[in-house]
Amino acid sequence: MKPVFLALLLSGLSAAAEAQNASNVIRTYFSGYEKKDWTITSGLLADGFTFTSPAPDDHIPLAVYKQKCWPQSKFIKKVDFVSIVQQGDHAFALYNITTTDNKIIRNAEYYTFSSGKIKSIECFFGGSGAGYPTNAK
Image 1 (cartoon, rainbow, N blue to C red):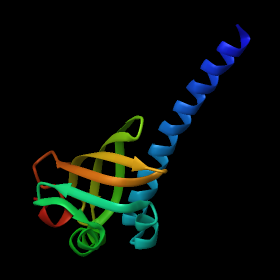
Image 2 (cartoon, rainbow, N blue to C red):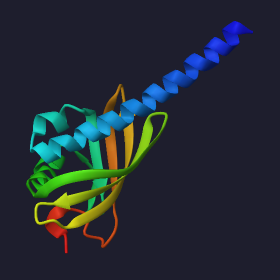
Image 3 (cartoon, rainbow, N blue to C red):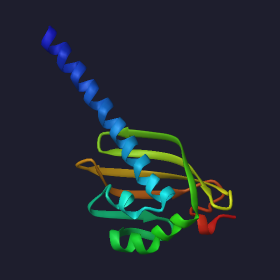
């Protein structure tokens, strides 16, 4: 009976560690935006990374993401997370961005992970529909 209990305990600890890891990766990814440091953000993106949003971006690759989305970082003051929920290699994050002119934007993102890095992000614009700092109303 003890080996079965130990296996269940270790399985639960492993799942908790994975959930903690996704939260840490997502928080660190956005800290790159707050600090205007591309190396922080890009260091968490897996080979073959894609980004999708209503902007419209349909599974754009890393080079296009950097060109199109990274410039938004200069308008981001702070990211506050409402919730990060993970199941296996997938996670949802709901967050508020405070822009440099103190506007609030709420978005949700769906993440897919591969080997501890972000393989894809699907962004859903929320709140007023502003979605990103230069579109904030």
